Image 1 (cartoon, rainbow, N blue to C red):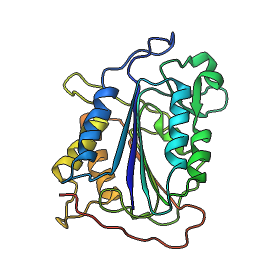
Image 2: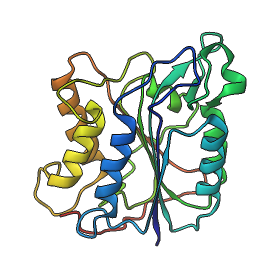
Image 3: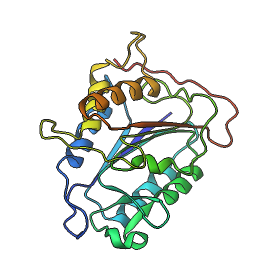
Image 4: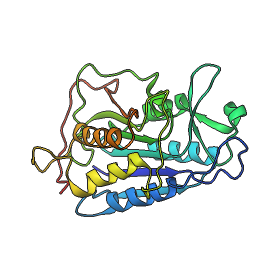
Length: 247
């Protein structure tokens, strides 16, 4: 199994008249990359960072990332930046440095395009982490699994797990006292410290991670609504745990 991550951060919207620039996304992907690269924590084989890309650069990188995998590979896709809901039909869009909110169809990336790319991937182990406003809207058209997807230990396991910093109607937050965005701050803290492993098993599941980060974010920003969406990939008939130490 090869473990690969694609981390995208969009901070500088200098080409956009409709989105303000953000302080944390580039710092977010740097911090997360350090954890995933760490031989004693993440143990990822490949970590690619994409800083301040255009919308076309984002969709091209996502397609290359998901299409170049094998069945047993673990793929982690992370995005930090502005997320936006189309007022016309409620669709969720990722943004690049060139995105114009009034022309989403031509300047942003609709969630459905990402869904199609992920579904065509040979990888049966996919973790999606979105730290952006309205990020719960990404899961709108996905089919949820009837039972839990036990994506274990450094995101091993099988199925697709989507963690979002907000639901489809809420904003995500930067706060002056945090160098990173609030959600990613606690994501990095959970992975680095191992504190999400409440039962001291030495293993960390995505369920553990989501519980820790969601609780911390809700305490730091009352009213925030991080979400977790476990999804069964269409050809799977059973789950298969893949273990590896986190701490």
